[in-house]
Image (tube, rainbow, N blue to C red; front, side, top):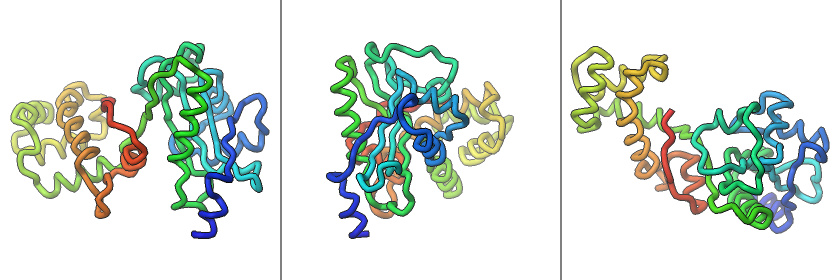
Length: 251
C-alpha cells in the first residue's frame, strides 16, 4: 500500500474532462463498466450524462493514460436538485450551462479496486470545483445529491433495541391509523416499513414522512461507527471533505 500510495500520489495525476464527441470509445465503455453509484443503462444514458449541461472529470496516471482511476459526474442546474430521476431524465430539456448557478456532484466512482484505501476523492472534488469556477462565473453553489445506504440497517437495529420515545405522540397516532393497529412506536413503524408498497400508499407515506426524516437526520448527524466517524459511509466521505448537510429530499 505504501508503494501504491507513492506511485499514485495526486501530484503525479492528470485531471481530464471526458467528452462524448472527443474521448475514445474504449474510455467511454470503461465509464459504463466502472460507474458504481447510478448504473449507466445505455449509450443514450451516457450521452445524456456528457451533454453540454453536464461534466465528467477523471484522474489519470501518465503511465496509464487510457485507464481512469476515479471519476465524478456533475450536473449544472439552477437551484439544488432534489431528485435523481429528474436529474438523469434523458427527455429533460438541456439548459444553457452559462446560466446555471449550481453544480450537483451526483456520482463519484473509484475505478480501480486494487487502489482501495488510497484517497483520491477529496482532491478530485476540489480540483473539479476549481475547474468549474474558472469556466462558469455564475456558479454559486456546489452540492452533492447523495443516497443514505446505511439508514435502514441502523433503523432496524434501533427498532430491535426498543428505544424509548422513538416517536412523538402525534406520529404514533398517525402510524396506528395508517396501519390499522394500536400499540407502541416499535410495532407501528416496523409494520409500516415491512409493507413493500408503503411508498405508493398515500396514508402510509404521510404518516412515515415526519418520523423517517427526523430519524434520518439523527442518523446522519449523530450516529457514529466504532472509529468515531459518521456511521454512514457516504455521509462520512462528504462531511469529512467539508460539506454541510443542507436538506433531506423526501421520496
